[in-house]
Image (cartoon, rainbow, N blue to C red; front, side, top):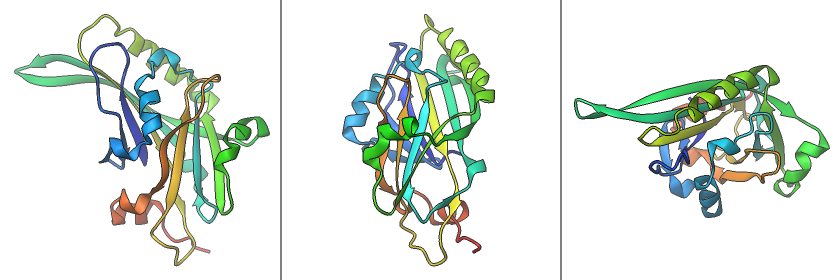
Length: 212
């Protein structure tokens, strides 16, 4: 399950869904997303999502040791189907895509204002070998145009790591997404304390004390 997941109503102009930040399945609520970001994300269209240019960024304490193999972008697209026996049903397409870190100055410079003392900044792209999977999901979802019902797009940034022994449970992070090469980064979480958003046991599992 993704550590940070946002859900927006897909702008196929059919219905709306509350934009939310979801942390390990627990609804943090629309208030977890900066207000300025809410309006930008509400206007997001699936056609605007460029798989090759999509970037995910994380700002975290420098002491956090990230596990590179844990980085994935979880993409979910769903459409509402006609009710069955009065119950709403959904058709869902999902992909869990490995991420590849980008270290060049051209990738990091748009986020220079996010860096600061005691912080680390990371930017990832979808691993090139997985781009075809996202392109295929996108094409299938765009084929839903013209049908009735609501649409939902979920994007989840999953990451894990370890903290120095004796570190505080407070782990403050910011997460940002960019959907195309010409677009700006949009903050999904801003200086959010994961200790207030994750169950204690889940935080301990995902961010244990480092062995050394």
